[in-house]
Each structure stands twice: as structure tokens, then as C-alpha cells.
Length: 224
Ligand SMILES: CCCCCCCCCCCC(=O)SCCNC(=O)CCNC(=O)[C@H](O)C(C)(C)COP(=O)(O)OP(=O)(O)OC[C@H]1O[C@@H](n2cnc3c(N)ncnc32)[C@H](O)[C@@H]1OP(=O)(O)O
Image 1 (cartoon, protein in one colour):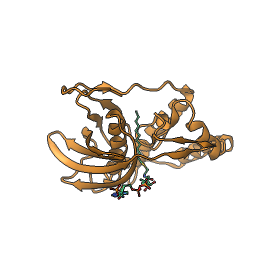
Image 2 (cartoon, protein in one colour; image 1 turned 60 degrees about the horizontal axis):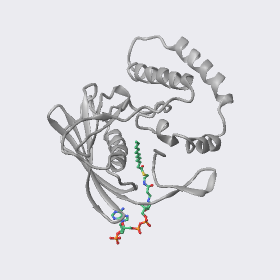
Image 3 (cartoon, protein in one colour; image 1 turned 30 degrees about the vertical axis):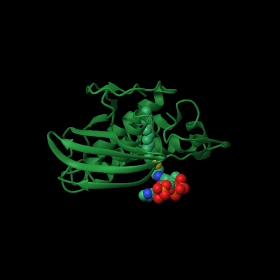
Image 4 (tube, helix red, strand yellow; image 1 turned 90 degrees about the horizontal axis):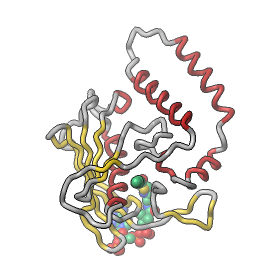
């Protein structure tokens, strides 16, 4: 996080965290490829019996080896925290859309994202809940970048024009106002120059118990 915010717009990539297990990242990357491929299959001529059998084989192999969710939750809050596992870009999370964040010198954060068929709401458009998911997370990241933290207490979204699938979208978010424990944060989504979505959220400084460590509380949603 920057101590001081300048007025130039100079994106700085949020560094990737080193993977504790390259094969996990590789497995997630393959699952994402499958996710996009399968989302495009309905009403196609593709014969799927053999594919479904092979996928079942992989799932049967994996399921019995998965640790208890409580152990996984606990491990998530050590080291790099949950940042690698979050549902917005986390490289360990198969449902995460491919979002990469940049912090900017002007205090905002930005991301370029192209969303595929798995994220469809209206025909050819991004589901409004997916836009809200990415925006909520991004506002949290903008808070961190601006030296603030907090849990989402409230947010409101205006869908100004349809948000297209399969085209690069620009997400942007910045801290708008602060008052004691309260942070108001804004966000937008643009397709080219066209405004698709604008949002404003209220975040309240708070802490939550860390799984497996009843004596510890965390103030950051992402362990970052
Ligand atoms: C590099 C990696 C980055 C990583 C970046 C990672 C980002 C991750 C982002 C994920 C974001 C999430 O999903 S967070 C998860 C979703 N959010 C939650 O689950 C939050 C659940 N809600 C709560 O736990 C609670 O309601 C809190 C903590 C938000 C607030 O409870 P509290 O602390 O008791 O607050 P309380 O005293 O009631 O209120 C304090 C003041 O705020 C006002 N206030 C409270 N709630 C509201 C409200 N909904 N709308 C308006 N105003 C409200 C009150 O009127 C009061 O104003 P006044 O009288 O003082 O003026």
C-alpha cells in the first residue's frame, strides 16, 4: 500500500503470491479451461458421454483425498492468507473469473477483464451478480490501497447500460470519503468509453475471528 497518493495514473500490478503447490495452480487452470469449454456446449452437436465419464473418473480420484474443509479454512489464514483462494481472481479458486488487479498512483485500483459464457446473465451480457461480486471485492482492494479496511455494510449498484460478454471490460474503484470507522468507496465498469455499471459501497472497520484460532481476529477480508 502507498503512503501517499499522487495524481498520475500509473498502474502497478499487484504482485502474484508464490504458489505453495504449482500442481494446484495447474489443476485450477485446467478446470477454468473446462469451465469455459463446457459453458459453450449446450445445444451443440458435441458427443459428451466419453468426456463425462473421464470427468467422473478424475472427480472420483480426487474427492477421497480432499482434507476436511475446517483444515483448509485454517490453513487459508496462515502465510499469504486467503488472497490466493478468493473467488475473484484467486489462482486456487476454480470459480474465480480471470481478474488481475492493478493499483494506481492516483489512489484508484483497476482491472481489465474479459468474461466468458459461464458468466452470462441477459443474452450476450454479464450477469449483474457477477459484476457485483467483482465490484465488491475490488472496492475492498481499493480500501486497502487507500490505507483503509472494513467489511462491506452496504452497497448500491446502478446498471447504466448492458455489460457485454467476450469484450474487454475496465473495472475501476477508489475511496471516495472517510469518516471515523466508515469508508465510502466507488466503482465503475466501462466497455470502451461506455459506462455500464456504477456503484457505491459503505465499509465499516471491523474484525472477524480467524478460523482455528479463537484468540485471533483479522481486520482484512483477504489476509493480505
Ligand atoms: C491486496 C489484496 C486486497 C484484498 C481485498 C479484499 C477484499 C475483500 C472484500 C470482500 C468484502 C466482503 O465480502 S465482506 C462480507 C460481507 N459483509 C458482511 O458479512 C458484514 C456483516 N455485517 C457486520 O458484520 C456488521 O453489520 C458490521 C461489522 C458491518 C457493522 O456492525 P457494527 O460494527 O456493530 O456497526 P454499528 O455499530 O451497527 O454501526 C456503525 C455505524 O455504521 C452505520 N451502519 C451500519 N450498518 C449500516 C448499513 N448497512 N447501512 C448504512 N449504515 C450502516 C450505523 O448506523 C452506525 O452509524 P453511526 O451511528 O456511527 O453514524
